[in-house]
Length: 146
Image (cartoon, rainbow, N blue to C red; front, side, top):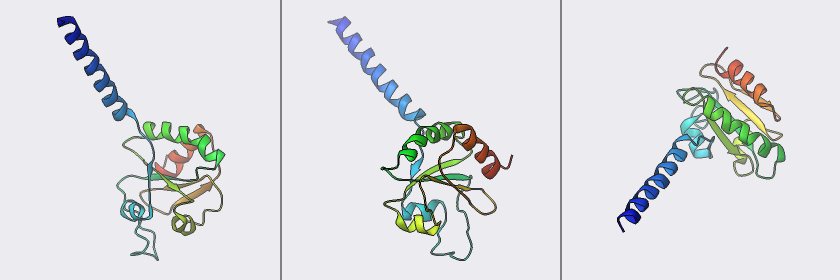
């Protein structure tokens, strides 16, 4: 009986600790809606004439759709880069099908399209999928100024 209680205790601790560690290390681009975009990126209704980034770190925004094969292909790469640049760059994603106003705001015409927003200066919009190395180069060039 005593062995069963100890076994149960250790197995419960193992399950909870692995769930906690998974939640801590799982970094993914954060989905944005029109409302969260206006809070975290740019409130274009208040300052429609001039782009004014609201974040405290540069950000990358992935315009995607569930039906888009290339969008699904680059998603794991963006998740990987999200972990690599944790604390340096925000990673967001916008479902272009559900957020038509944001898609129109940036004139996104093809998917995937990545929007790079530096701390200073204007955003850069690059359509199409890219390799991890290319994304890394774009992040270094457009977001981190290296």
